[in-house]
Image (cartoon, rainbow, N blue to C red; front, top):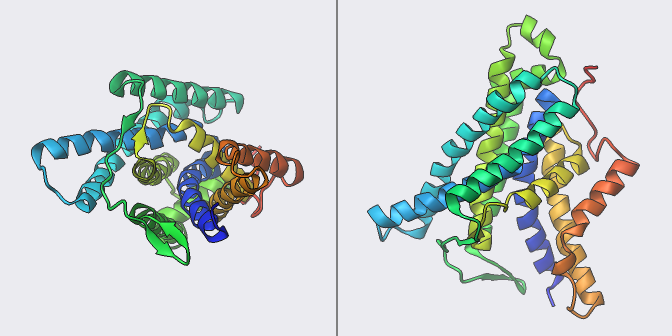
Length: 309
């Protein structure tokens, strides 16, 4: 039976990935008031692109250290995800900015299905093994175990979230993003190019999803065309939990949701003598979503985006 510390470590690892994905949802919603349900597929494309790049590296430069290969895989997945995300914004969402909210929502769902289908055509429908690039020997911490891949995941997630916070709070682009989120018309009158800001917002979200996708694949050692669907839904739940439209809320919501899933699965496992537990882990995200929408629709950290209606 997992110890409490082990469950917390597992929850932090899972929550870090949810937080990275949730940031993409919350930034797009903050700027456009739009839920990009195709964002989970950006994670999948990042993982698939990384796998293809790793196969190419193995062919042209065999013998590279696993850590170098992982860095190259992330570096290669990022531009692929950014390009796909920018195309999605340009083709699927730009013309629907002033449409009724139901139209872009349906379009986002359709884009999600389209990306899954294209991925299935390119990479196949069967799960593919993702190579173990770092040592699989776990490190013991007070009776709990954590792998080098999970440590790297936590470090990358913390660095990415810190970098995003600094970008939003301290840079000219960040000020422009906050201005467009507050009121795009007034921001345009002040010289802010809303289209450029929105494109950068999608691109930044894609960078975070690419990192999450590669690390998700490295942690679970498998990829498939539908792998982004469930993490995407859970990350959306995390964004709602923290307060969608608020980047700090997305970070908090992701970490909390990961901990809730891990601790909840462990608790159920203890009650059932280990017969159940991880099998019911997925339900906690949606239980949390229902409770939050019922009790506090604005989320833990509230909604900072002005009402534009």
